[in-house]
Image: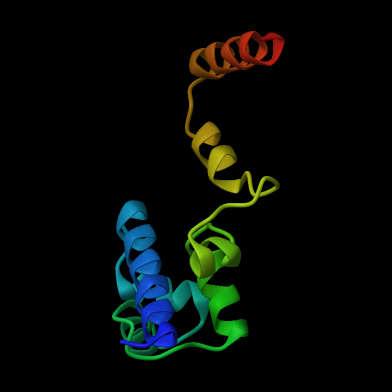
Length: 107
């Protein structure tokens, strides 16, 4: 397997894992990204590389950066996952999270 094939497979695995983490079907992600389910399937299976505009739309549908899908690394400015998680917290949990953050930042 050459480097390009390996890259495409790894990117596809990250797409698949993020989709599963969010509990979404291929059809749901495809609809959110305005692509065909077949294209998403071939991308997830590492069969086919996808264009940058489609990768960008997939990343938005999966609530991750395109950088993460490409490299497996999140950027320091990509805090969208944290904010999405925080939105699910109760007011009491938010207070606790804020207190913990304040303590950590004082270290």
